[in-house]
Length: 141
View 1 (tube, rainbow, N blue to C red):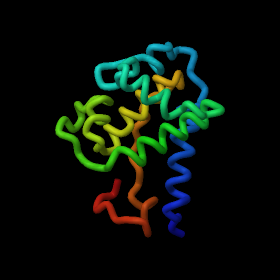
View 2: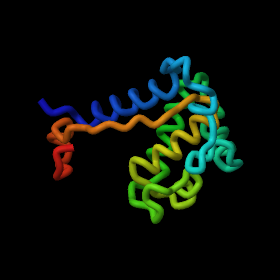
View 3: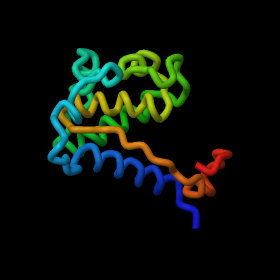
């Protein structure tokens, strides 16, 4: 039985925000590992910090803040392939207002971390069967 687009999006959003906002942080993880800046995830960049504050100003909790950040990235960053492809930073994605899964998650992660919400990227292969009835990606994964 195919799942609806709404169910798929709700599940993806819940999984993303639950993982980012309330997941247990392993003992071996340092603040630098899940809250720090990297060359692509510019957590401390003034524009990232200001945007994170603007987006989450009215959030009553970390989960609500994560949902607001998720929705902002989803709604304000159009889907597309930026010039730098894999080497596109959070601020470059913000400037371009365009990104695909990797670049959007780079910006999402930077905004979460700038909001003191520990976050990391978790990659996985998704069977194309889960999208049956929604779209045909033309590949098995």
